[in-house]
Length: 207
Image (tube, rainbow, N blue to C red; front, side, top):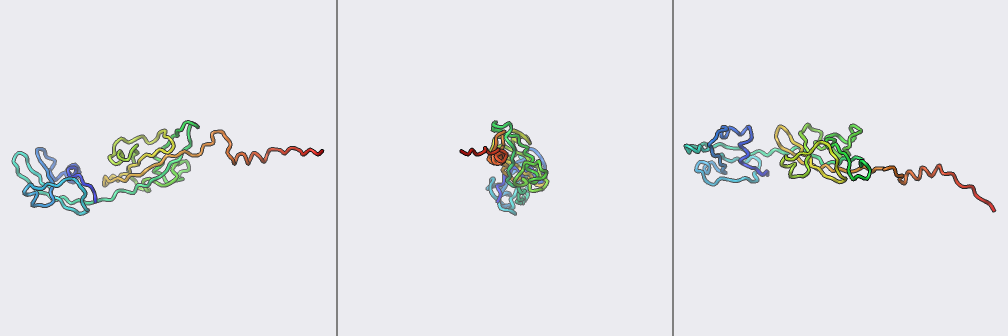
């Protein structure tokens, strides 16, 4: 099922023939052709199954003459959008921020080696239009895209909108931004073990 906004059909290029792009025209949608002919029981936006036929009544406001057109609703699956993670070093150390290149999410993990993507290719290896957004509603509505790179805090989630240009359908994926373990000039446990090999032992003193 897909939630259809019926007035939007007039904005789809292939369906502009419904009213021929004219003005002074009222278009209503009906579940039955007889309802469209009699201009009764208009239907509203809502979920409709794949293959549903609705009837558009196109009426001239000046003459009240009308025509009825069938509209076939076809559900097209959105493109695959994979959740993924990007990892970068905190920079500068202690700032709580790191620079992330969001478009790395569109690359296969580990290729090239400088790629910060560690989980999955967000657009599944296909040629898609990908934009990044601060919230899921913005990604779903395709508004407020953010830049392809920027400074973010550890654990930030941005939302990738993966759109098929041919169909206009889009999938949404989460991109989790994480810090790599920064050394910050301090020794970790492994460092201490290595250095201990070079510390000479004190000679024993016999009494």
